[in-house]
Length: 241
Image (tube, rainbow, N blue to C red; front, side):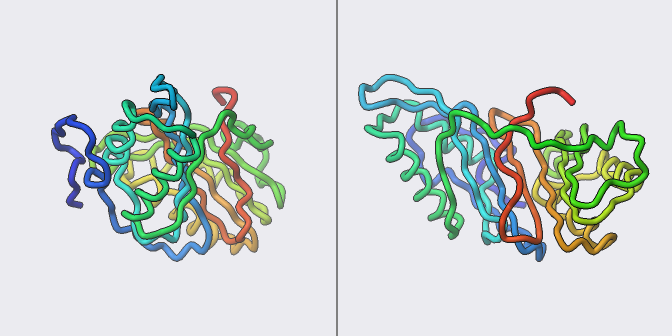
């Protein structure tokens, strides 16, 4: 994979704008529905009085987009807004939306958020003694680990699975733990998990969500499913397990 900025020393002259954003062609997995939710926790800009504002920015990119943005280039692009003033937050969100859509050739959603949704009720499969899950239930696997194929550094997440079918708890545990030394990007991991569970159980309704830990002030949370209406919101985990 050739990129403009990943693994390279970058000059911090400003502003750089669109030219710093680096698009990567997305591997089309065939999963019909999904979205990648980016949370930018350290987004700094200036208000109409030229005073700094620090807010959380949410960017939602559909899983069907032809391109995605390489995460380091996204961070560098967003960092440049620290000394730019905007009369309204909505004007800034519209500016970012327009810029990213120009690069990835797909409609996206951009907004500022003050509060995250609550973590949905779930069964933690790490500790349950059940042999099988109940149908139409939500499961959580705590402590998912995978390896970034570019940096070889580990990524960590909690994995949430909704299924209308009963799933073998032991099979699911072993399967998700098999990623611990496997290299792949967040999006590819969640797509592979979705496809493997679907192929094993042929669920009429299946949705998989990866809530990954932040890196450099940004987390990327892919959701994949086979229903048009996505169940999972942009929620924040309120406790460690």
